[in-house]
Length: 293
Image (cartoon, rainbow, N blue to C red; front, side, top):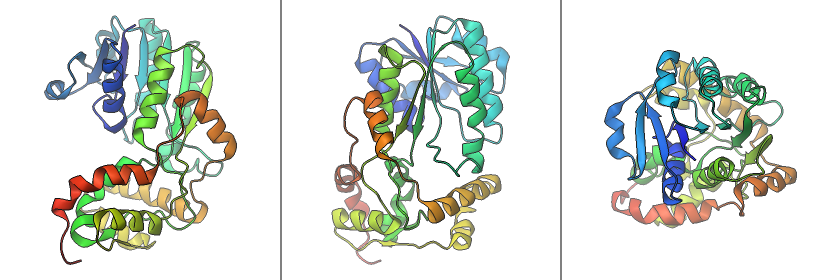
């Protein structure tokens, strides 16, 4: 077995590559940037490929028999995802695992959700063995907010008060590795969520308790969030995320009991908790906690 991971240097991909290597699997990781090869775990092999250059994919796919596809957040995400599926078919890949996004009814208009739907369709119509993963908002996204949380005592992600079943990326990696390496996951769509129903205020309170300082939720003002986000993100991404956060505030991002039943089949264990994640990370952050908000 030789899986190829596209997106293997990112948050979910790197966890998946590590698990594959630990399981004795000869894994390949495709990236455009050869400078990222040095960070790969021992046992993983970097290959060069670019989803916007389909010709480059032929060499990258050579010798692989399965694919874990994580498309980058991009205005061309749909085209890149479909290009990867077509390359997989041409290369004789037998099994494809695609990481999409949790898609409750009514969320399909969010741009980086909508862009994944045609890729899901291409995967399902590929005649390959396929599995689709649909994860919720990641616990690990909070690493982006470390400075705001520790220095200013603010949790800035405007997720609202309806509640979200956020997920640990290690649960996503577990599902991906299972689908790549085990039988029984063909034609399965796995929603991936955590049990904790979290509001913005809940997340702030949990961080504050584990850091030993007050952390407040920044609130639901999307104009204020967008003004701040423009310092770090391109305008198209700010607009995309604004639509997403508006949906979260209006509808939440909540799993059903049926989702959890299906999830167990893919992950193989109960979801990791947000409390456990924060208790693991907070000691590393305490050195940067400001004494005054």
